[in-house]
Structures are given as C-alpha cells and as structure tokens.
Length: 355
Picture (cartoon, rainbow, N blue to C red):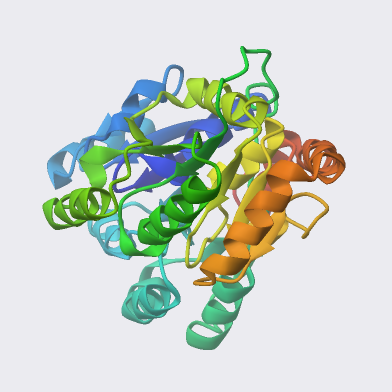
C-alpha cells in the first residue's frame, strides 16, 4: 500500500502528524510520501520519508505517474482534490480536517469545500474533536467519516534529565496569528511577572509564518507592556522540543496554551508526555489530553484572573503538580500509541477498498 499525504507547508502540528504517521505506517507495510505546495521550516525535521515540495501541476503529475499511489490524503487544501482529479488520479481521495483555526474559519472553510468534497472525495478523516465532527455532520452529511485519534511519539517525547533553570519559565508554543491568541499569553504573562518577578516568558514560534502586520502588532505589545523577561525562540527542531518542555517542567513553570480552538493541539500532548504541566483554554481538541486537575488545568478563554489563579496553583501546589504530571504521562502513553493509529488508518483504507 502506497499513500500520499498533501498539505500546504511543512510546519506545526500537521508536519508532525505527517512525518510521524509515515514513520509508523512503514512498520506496518504502508509506504507514505509527503507533498507540500510551499517550503517551510519543518523540512528540517524530515529524514526518512520521500518528500516533494512543488505547486506546479506538471511536477505533481509526474509524481503521480511515477509513484502510482493507492490513495491520497489531502489535509485542509480542498482545492487540491480537484487538481488531483484533473491530473487523472483514479484512486480514493480522503479529505483530512486538521488546523482549521477558529470556529468561524472552520465553518467557512467546510462550506467552501463542500462542493469539492462531494465531487472528488470518498471520505473525510477527523480527529475525535466535537466541533469538527458536528460541522461535517451539518454541512456534509453525505460524506463518509473516519474518526481516528492522532498519535504522540513517546519514544521521542518523554521527560529528559537536564539542568534546573534558576528561574521558573512560562512557556508558549504556536504561530503569531489570531486563533493561537498570543495576546492573551502576554496579558497573563505580564500579570504573573508582577507576582513572580523572576518568571521568564518563553515563546516558541515559527517567525516565518507570521504576517508582517502580526509581527508589528507583536513588537508593539511587547514594547508597550515593557516585557523585558520575554524570550522568543524560533524554529526549534522538532526533536529538540522535548528538551524545551523538560526545561519548563524542571524550572517549576508550565506551558500555557491560549488557543481559541484546536483540532488536536499537538504542543499540549507532547508537553504533557514530557512531564510538563499545561494550563489551557478549553479549546475542544485538547480535551483529549486534559482533564482538569488530573492531567492538566483549564481556564476560561479571556478570563485573565482565572488563568493567573490556576497558574499560581500549578506552580505552588506541589502535590497537585506532581499528580498532574504523573497522570498526564500515563494518559499519553496509554491512549496515543502510534500503533493504535496505524491499525485504525489501515482499517480505514481497507474500508475504502485499498489494501
């Protein structure tokens, strides 16, 4: 079985998922290839999977003719489904819903995509995320659904023994864009530094994906709030992220996730796997990882007072902190095993007469 996975740019959670599932599926006799229509910083993470970067029909056509894929999984880019049919790809096309942004953006995207999905696709692949499942039930009730839990690679993401930071770290991971809600991180971080003066604010981001307008807005916020304890780190290689999460955990700090909506939330799951406690908005997808005061903490979107209170509890209530970290690691290990994903993925392909 040979499968092509396509997406816009190798970055963020989709890059992680694509690379990890190709590595995992290979162990089960499935050969995965990757096609991105634009280059991105995540290419540095890919070492063993055939990967193509092109947006030209001629190139894509040559790839399809040479590789004879049995099926193609198209993530988010619904226009690609039409292109593949125009390029005479005959096999099943599965549309995958990942990284759709806010509720409004997701609804608009699915409505815009519905014609293409009805015309060119055999199924939709979804994480077990309620707002996405409900959206496809509402807009595309005729489209066959396969719901598969994404995986976390605990062979890479696990606690690391590193030196203890002399000051606590408040971590954040994401792109500088509306749905990731970085302004709320700065508000919460500013409040916490007034209570804990030596707290370091550390934002792990991909600066190449931020628009000039967003970059300007970010710099203006940092200057206006005089956030001298803020450190931004761009384009950390994925295999180095466990060190970052372990550093945050060992410092006595935590990861703060401020997203409005997440389809899955890879950063949250990978941090928890590394023993790094997480305080998050209830952004739907992260419910797979977080049960309040058991495997992490929630706060209400926009409620800065609540976030500060929960964050302080995470740092000061040491028995609870240890319990959250231990239970989080256990959850990730038991529920997000790559082998489970591979078996579910192969079952989906068999249901679509691909074997």
